[in-house]
Amino acid sequence: MSPHLTRAAPKSIIDLRPVYHRAEDRIRAHVLLCWLALLLIRITETRTGQTWPAVRDELQRLHLGTFTGPAGSFRQRTELTTGQKKILTALGLPEPRRVFEATPATS
Image (cartoon, rainbow, N blue to C red; front, side, top):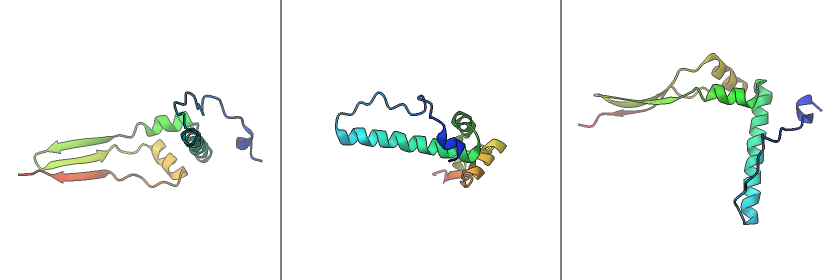
């Protein structure tokens, strides 16, 4: 078994409390979503070789801005950092489009 699978998960990673659901199916759905989130975190950490807080902090630096002028408006993301590119490559994800939306001005 690989070393990363034998580690115990810190309690702060999967915090299931408080659960405000009363119906059993909703509680089960809540626990399943928490488990899926933890699974995605572990996959991200394994593939990137970084901790989840480090990956999250790097990706949170990516922003989408809206720019408006006389010709119309457009939405464009910030330039990817080297760290963001490495994370996306390690996860097998394509770079997001640079320009998301362009709307010409109405007369």
